[in-house]
Amino acid sequence: MDTAKPSSDIEKILPYWQNTLSFTININATDYTSNVKNVTLWHRYSPDNSSWNNWTVYNVDPESPWSILFTGNNGYYQFYSVAADFAGNKEDAPETPDLIIGTDTGKPTADAGNPQTVNQNTVVTFNSSGSSDAISGISSYVWTFTDENLQTLSGKQPQYTFDNADEFLVTLNVTDRAGNWDTDTITIIVKDSTPPTIIHTAELVNIAPGQPVEISVNITDNVGIVSVILYYRSTEEASWKSLSMKQKGGNTWVTTIPGKDVTNDTYYYFFVTDVNGNNATKPENGKQNPYLMSVRLDAEGEEEEGAGIQGWIIGLVAAIIATVGLLGFVYYKKKLKEIKPSEKGVKDKPKIKPRKVKYNRGSCYMIREQTPETSFKVFSDFVKKGAPGLCVTRTNPDEVKEKHKLKNVELLWLTTGREDEHSINPTHIEKMTWTIKEFIKNNRNSAVLLDGVEYLIVQNNFLTILKSLQALEDTVSINKSILIIPISPMAISEKEMSYLERDFVVV
Figure 1 (cartoon, rainbow, N blue to C red):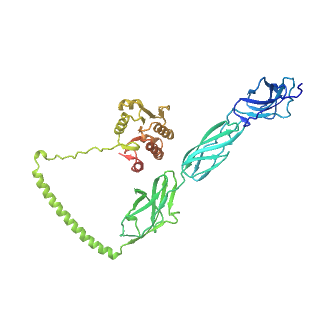
Figure 2 (figure 1 turned 180 degrees about the vertical axis):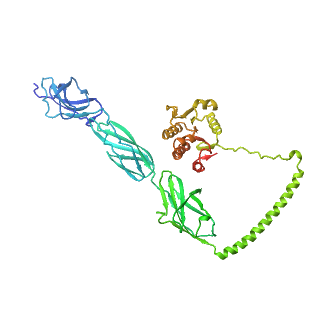
Figure 3 (figure 1 turned 90 degrees about the horizontal axis):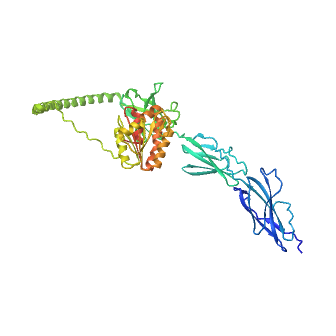
């Protein structure tokens, strides 16, 4: 006779949070006399882990092994099992559940906060407080971006100091306790705040009165120099005069103070502006603490003696010039007689050989021409040799295709008349730059023609277009492509052309 009740328990399922709504519940059941006949699975549910519904039977398993596939909803569950044997004995319900578990298949919502624009060396606080998860809750916040190397931050509001000027795309990944995840991105724009570095040493100048003086200075900057101004005045004057300095080579900038402004003592200082508008003055507080140029003029007696010697030298030179001129005239008359009548008045014009340029992949070329005929020919030659081609032009693409016989070339029209996948507004410079970059990255060994730089400068400004072109250089070099930019020398100033010559191969 069997009067003993069987026993059972549910095997643990880990982790507590499951990201599936169906899972198998395994049950261990024993009866030492008449054996286990069946096992019943009881469960109850709560959507918030607070209010629970009544215990109900989910299923009865009539044979070993005791295993039941459970399917439910997102939320919280409690389970226990009750075994029955063949003698009719039945296990009592336990005081506490055998198994508690949470189910969550919904992904969280990631919110990386608002874009930020800051200066270099600024501590940026990221904010993911807008992120949420409806059921299991967020377990981790991970931020990743590239600043020279891959950077990884953790936490809801981590901080980071950006030392480099650039535009950074930051990705936030939030993961909930069930393993579901979501991402969001923000852009951090770090503006260049590093001023130019100026190196200069004032010198004692030994000159004659009224003689001009050349001033040079060494300037470096992490981005690029836009202008260098020399301010100067004599110690007897109250107002400052200014001169623009020109780059002589490398980091050296020079200008010349006119002789009429040179006195015994002259104050001066430098004011430098880089591409991003950062300024530097040397010396610091230049107007209040300028350099002093000590000009050592020749003595009066030495000037008179020098003037006498100068007069003698000038007379001698004049006599030599007169003699040479006379001999030249006699020779000319003699040769004129030897010339045949039919040859008189005819000049032999030297033949000008066209400049030959080897266009190499991985380089950017600025071709100076009134109309972009040469540029289109170079571009067409690369395309015919198999290079994927992109032509960004101010002219209607249909006219460009017909005139230059372009085939299998993508064209992007710079126009305010429409904006679709084949056109772009000339004021949307960032979009244009991104489009060209993506084409080059996706089409290695490609050829890109940017026709209409003058139009872009008019619609924006020179510095904006210069930075856009500079941003394309590395992409062109890395992907072994070629960028061809026709430009009319009459459309931009000599100063602006000098900036272009520093970054591009000018033909």
